[in-house]
Image (cartoon, rainbow, N blue to C red; front, side, top):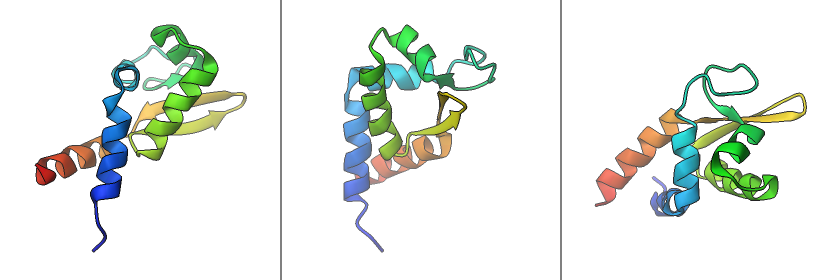
Length: 99
């Protein structure tokens, strides 16, 4: 069995930043995607809601994606993101077990 500590640390680092927590909260909204998706948001939607530049949003999304907390899909010229609910549940279990 592998050591879960690096994965837990990566997830904790991802949610330690208030901007990334705001992004995760924004991704909970339903029907707000300009790509007509019921869940998730495209990168430009996140930019508008959070009020940061595209490169900054990309940086935050990369961290959330590497932590397994969001999923990203390329749709034409757009990046569409949604919460990885299974990854978030796993994170909650890992955190509960470690404390």
